[in-house]
Structures are given as structure tokens and as C-alpha cells.
Length: 409
Image 1 (spheres, rainbow, N blue to C red):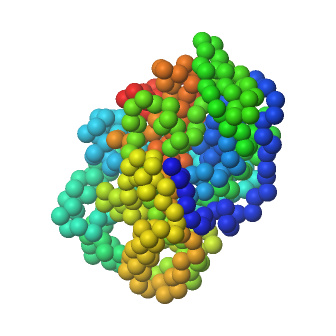
Image 2: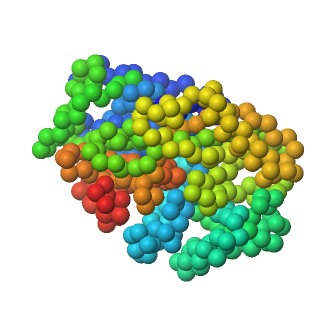
């Protein structure tokens, strides 16, 4: 599949010169991470902080896969709302998942405080809304469940929403805590720089050709015929990891994003909060530190790997139509913002699980192999949870939360 296509914001505006050598000899390590995107970087940060001898291998360049197409909205909310998730996994587990995501936002804030680059991180408030009057009662039910479990939320009816937003809102849940935004490419490199000081080794342009799990270790071979012997491996290759499973683990879609040039004001956008609607293929909005608007959505299922949507180019008519739809919606939503001009257009493969939760943990068919797969809209927060949980697992401290994210659920 063509994971990303188009003009990427982050790798265009960020000037990062770090490069890493490719593997050219046989090595051994305690933990090998396959995948040098934001998930691999977060996982390496926690492992090296715990004193574990860790190596990252990335088949391309660090941060040049799905990471550079991430809109990097960090929210305690997940793809499945709290009521829906409660019906799937029980209310206690559902609340726990939301609370873990909420805490993960503030854990990232703490990490940012230790790094040499703040990565345009900013705590934000967020709005989850509907423009359909028939869905307001369901949204109120969602609000009451969140309020019951002490999430810092208020409900906005149509008139209250009109006083804050120019969007067509019939009802909304406004959350005052548990959300943030970040530059994922800068964050990835800042994490790796910190981890290098803690003993991390990184190899770019190093592709794994075979994985042979053994009773007490894993033997791997690169496409250049160099061997890696690791006590454990963590696969953090995102959507490419599906090749390791003999069952369907997620539904894949392509999501489209436009990014504006910096605008002069944000009239009609209360507190420049993160915004998301409640549609099945939802739209989402955020800003950047330099005043750009990022607007994404209009998802389309990709089908098979050989399908047109799986390999869609940015110049295809479908892509152009999607970007035009997003641009027209953006102007409709914010008629008082007069200087909207699109600067970047890109798309990327996106995966969702049935319950909206990630896959974190071991896989019985592959001993000593673990997965950190942050499928869903909360990929970065899930990556952080995976980094914490798998580090504890490598230290012999299995945690109860792993049951919630297990691969065979």
C-alpha cells in the first residue's frame, strides 16, 4: 500500500538534519524495535530510560512513514464513544481506556519538558459535536456518562454553541481537559536524540527480511544478510504489521488532509480548540503554532492492497475532489476567517479496530515478539501507553491494562 501521498506539512516545514547509518555487521541486543516512526521513538524512549539495551531499525528514514502524515491530535476521546465502548468491553474497562488516554496527554507534556525541542506541543480544549438534531439526545447521554466519571465536560446546546462557533452545531460536548496537539516529526527526532544519550542505537535504511523466534531469543536477518540476535523484539511498524497476522486485525481507510497558510484570526473558533464531529467517517480540525489550520477527514475504505485507493496518488481526480470538499467545508464552517488559502494537501492510510482500541502485547504464534500498534485516531497516545506497558513487561512487570489491549481479544 502507498501509506502516504502528497505534500507533507511536517517534513516540509521542519529542518531536521539527523541521519543514521545502515546496519553493516552482525549485532546483539536486549530489545530490537522494528519501526522508526513516532511509535518506535516513544517505545525506545521508555526502554532506554529503564536502562534496557535497545536498538531501532527503520527500513527508510526516521519519521518518514505514516508519522509525517499524522495530524497529531491528542485526545482522551477515542474513535468509539464512551457509551459505545461500554457496550463492547463493559463500563469499567471503557472508562479505564478513556482515563489512560487522558493521562497519556499529560505524560507527553512531562516528556516534552525533558526534551531539547518542545515540538510545538500545546494543551488544548476540545469539542465533540453533531449537526443532526436527531442525534442530540444520544450525545447528551454520552455527556452524562462522561460527567458521571468526572471528565471535565460541559454540554452545549445549539444556542450556546452559536455564541462560540460558526459551525452548524446542534449539540456538543466541550472538554476542558485531556487534549493537546504536537508536531510529530520534531517530536520523533527529539525523542530519539534523548534516547541516544541513554544508550539507544539507531539504523536507518535497514529492512528486516526474516524473523525467527526461538525459545529464549529472536534471530532476525536484514535484506543485506546481516543478523540481529535480540532477547525480545517490538514491532512498531504501524499498518505494515498486518502481514504478521493470519486474521484481519483492522479496517483500513485513506484519510485526506488540507493545511492552510497561516491565518490572521480565528473568528468563530472558540479558543482554537480541537474539533471533531460524530459522523461515522468524521472530520477533525486543529491549528498549529504558526497559525495554520489542519482539516482532515473524507475517509474512503482502501480495500485490497492492489486497489486504487490503497495506492492513490495525490494527482488523482479522487484526491483532488476530496481536497476540494474539505476546502469548501472549511470556508462554510468559518465564514468570518477571510484569508483561507490551502498550502499543503496529503493523504494517508488509517486503520481502525472494532472497538477503537490499540493492539499492545505478545502474540502466541511469535514467542518473544511484542507489538505496539496504535491503530485508531489516538495513535500517538496509544504508542505512549504501549511504550510504558511493554517496558514494564520487559522488566518482568506485566500490567493488568495489557488485557484490555491484547491481540486476541
